[in-house]
Image (tube, rainbow, N blue to C red; front, side):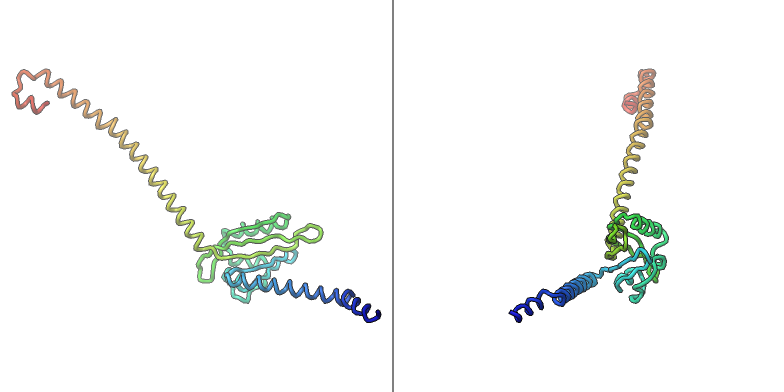
Amino acid sequence: MTNAKAVHDDHHGPEAAARDHRSQEERARASEADLVLALEAGHMGIFSFDLATQQIRSTATFAELHGRPADRTNLHFEESLTNVHPDDRPLVRDVVARILRSEIVERIVYRVVWPDASIRWIELVGRTLMDEHGRPQRATGVCIDVTERTLAYKALEAKEEMLRRLIEIQEQEKYLLCHEFHDGLIQWAFGARMLLEGCRHKAASGWTAEEARVVD
């Protein structure tokens, strides 16, 4: 009985609970590591933004997508805006302000300027994590380069706009042509006809057959 009780205590005592807890933590870390590896393989950057300290911790891919060296993975929010296109910085700041007001932001697209002055489009998807009191604590998520997709979409928009303008010009030309034809050529031809008919009636008796044929 004593041995059985010892075995029972060994499986259900504090030490067993601690082992179970460590095992769960190890599984969670392994699962997180697998997720990070999968995202990195897809060239997606991962970030964590501490709202209290305004510090951003990220993966190397996140830094590279923003035009920074791979080892620049821990920096202040304001410093991170250095690579964001000046016209898009207000948009990024507004997103952070909304997060601080407990508004969950799921998606944002903005431009970054790389060291070679090229412009890339970044799509960032994330969520706000709350503390036990329901206050925003940090934001976390992933980002990906969507430059090719964005440029293709903008090129399509430009073509559609050009086609729309071309149709408008054609319609305007049709209107002008019809207006010119109706108020110009037709009126002029009608007036010429009336003049010729008047001439024919007045002088038809003195015309030769050839002159009458020409007038007709």
